[in-house]
Length: 235
Length: 200
Image 1 (tube, rainbow over the protein chains, first blue to last red):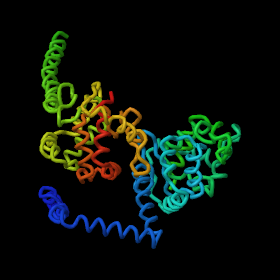
Image 2: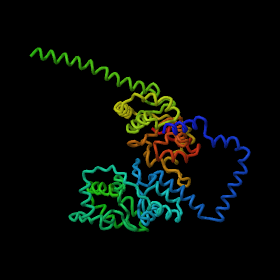
Image 3: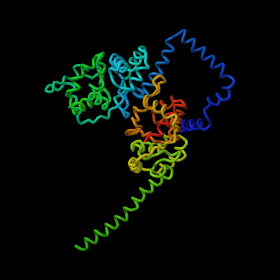
Image 4: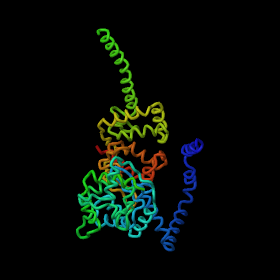
């Protein structure tokens, strides 16, 4: 441990070896290297589209994970950034298109999604689907039991259906219905509170968000907090 | 009865005498910070403004200096020594104190670059895979919880900090900053930090 730390410090102090090499050989070999690189890129483009596409996807995935977390577990920034890990691909692809089509209001994600090709959207969704990190947790625990009851049984007196009926008993979702398990507590609250203001915003393109609209509207603040806390801890 | 009263009076005097140096020590700690961080913690190149900084962030950084996780040259040179004898409690007290002071803007960036910086901060550069800073640092760069305020910090400080993330310093802090800063070009860093230096 101590010796590896020392090595790192030594390297920093005496500049990094690759930089010294670049400095010594850069002037003589820069042009041939650049030409070779251009030729190589040309070959990739012409011969194997997948090679280029994979590089593009890798860079894009790393960009997504800059905000959504290295394992897409979500990140609690100034605005809560949702977990994408384990999310249903159909749901995720639909949301990315919803940002582009102004069905779902979010300036940041409009900009992000706008730069994605349809092929990239599918590839990103497939990657996130395969990730399974632990939930980040942090929600207050005192109303988790109440949240569980609402999730499993609904609130019949308030005409609120059981969440489990659509989202599944383990909150893993299905097809166009999102996984909620392990989702960020503040993100779930923000979505449920603002449902009618954020989703289904393009009257020319009605979407599945209308199904959730009456439920989100009927839940009161403490019910939202309870059910959000419950699902945020589900693995 | 009068004996008891006398005893209380003596104890009260003794207690206040004992309490005074403790309060004095607290002020001494703040004075020590301000030697470098400027009057009222407003920052003095290269020491960043502490006034109005998120207390959770300041406390975490003090612990990072202590554990040597924050390892850029000025941290090694100054902060590692400065926090060597700092208790966790004093770190929290100092962080809470500086959070109560109103920050001023450094205004030392390049005004001509501020518009480009604002665009990177607020919207990111999706085509270049550069994230929008606003999502974590807030609409007015005010920070939240352990995420620092950036608004009003000095151009010189922010610029070196972003460069150093990209150079591999403070990697132990983990994601997301080392990765994000590493993607910024020198021109983008110039624009971004210019913009931030003017935010009140």
